[in-house]
Image (cartoon, rainbow, N blue to C red; front, side, top):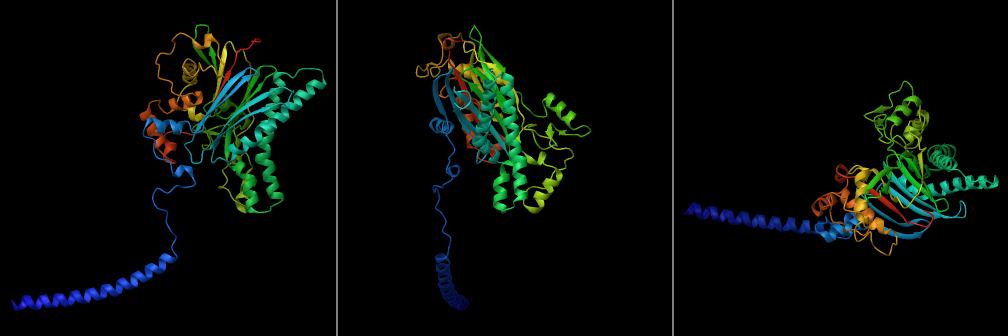
Length: 446
């Protein structure tokens, strides 16, 4: 009993000591905390709205939120003249920020009639080159086409399709030469600052495929210029209402046997393609920018030594990549040729050209394709027999959105799952998606 009392007394004394010590430490700690708090970087509370919209996106879980996400950047433009009924556009990013870009433009500067331009630019290693193309490619193309038209007029002739094709090739090649070679020469000649060098060279060290369609209202002819692996497909309707997918471009990668043969001829004795990639690294065999595959070893080493850039890659006979496009010319007969699909490879990774044409045909046959506001389609277009074997409901007023929805699986559960994934994980399952669909209208001249 005495031991218990003595032990308890000692325990009480110890507790008192501990309390006093704790109080002192707590007072010091509180003072230090107050001092730190005055100089602290205040953290945002949870669920704060950030300036970057990608930070506030919640996973879409129901149909309304899925539709809101899918339709965020869609647009439909009703032209209803010059043989063009309308065009639909949409884009869905996987990268953050999106590396794809696009352009839609009209010009009267070539032959006093409207020329329409639609472009899809699939960037890689960043968005710098695709943005540059959106800003500069069409003006350069218009200038070249105008020169060709003016030369023909001075000779009392009409410009040929071949001469316009050459103009497109010249425009692509000249712009890429400016991006890759003229800008690096400016940097080396007048080295103002690292910042200036970065500004000039970002479109060169990044890269982008380019798909550009030029349509002449005067001749009802369109020309599709393709550099890279974006794709253009014409939707043609047969007399029985069924659809044909007519390719207007070829994917320019190492898997294209003609591209592989071209590279072998241009670089004899070298193994340019490894796993169907340029020097084992780059998928498209034609692209803007991608200067590491175009600069000499000396230029790359100097840039790496004096400014910035990744270590030079081993090159023997550059350039291994070109921006010169392949061009396809088509005279539009709108009684048969109903629409044109242009899309970055994010779409074609998920579906064939035939499937894409079927889906747009399905859209035309839906209530949205019959919308009288567009005044786009004849009765033969609107009421074909039911050729589509597996009908799935069309829920989008925009044909490009209809394609993107189906590229993600079509059903809400699949679409929601893919939209839930954020960058960089999302890149394992889907690419940036950029889609333009141009619808042609029937006219008396057809």
